[in-house]
Amino acid sequence: MRRYRLEIDNVRAHLRSLWIVIGLQGLIILALWIGWSQAPKQLRVYVPPDLRSGAVLAAEEVPPANIYAFAFYIFQQLNRWPENGATDYGSAIFRISPYLTPRYRHDLIADMELKARRGELAYRVRGMHEVPGHSFEERRVDVLSPDIWVVWLDLDLLESVKGMTVKQTSIRYPIRVVRQAIDPETNPWGLALDGYGADGPRRLNESELSEPNTASPKVNKEPS
Image (cartoon, rainbow, N blue to C red; front, side, top):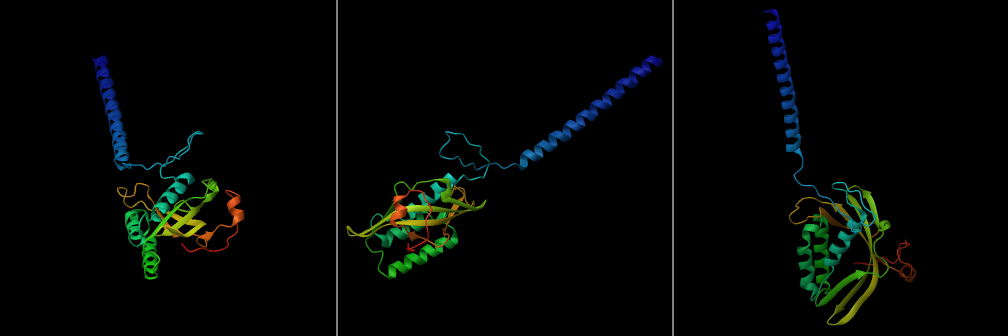
């Protein structure tokens, strides 16, 4: 009888240990479920254009090449007036408004109204492209903080009125870019233009144009 009682006690002890294991597993499963439920459902990952040498990507980290590409594309669209600046300027601001900070959008609207009063928009066609040989390199993107950058764009600006060229010049634009992940439906980049940095746009001189991708002194400030 004593042997049977010992066996029963052993079985009961084993059952208690099994219940303890089951309880611990339940707690682990509960902790994993809580962690999974609080994990973000979407992650934004910025893939650099050139992956020939590989890349280590972290969520929400924006490589300089992506910042440059964003600033150039959006700024080029803003300054594309295909037919008549009197209507195209406002249309461009409205079209890319999700990619502009409220402050910069307000400044652009004020600039548009000022140019309209001066008669600088009627029948004006505008376009811009990169200065040949002045394309992206990492030093063209200044990282001010994890969420703020200044992109240096060297662009050829061409304006004409009724087929007559009225402006053709090369300008360096310091474009300020900030993180603005407000509405991923209208702005999947999570970035926005925030106006000009440094001392604003300025005309490139001959020596700067003949030496691609080089730094230069700030001279001949040029209005946009």
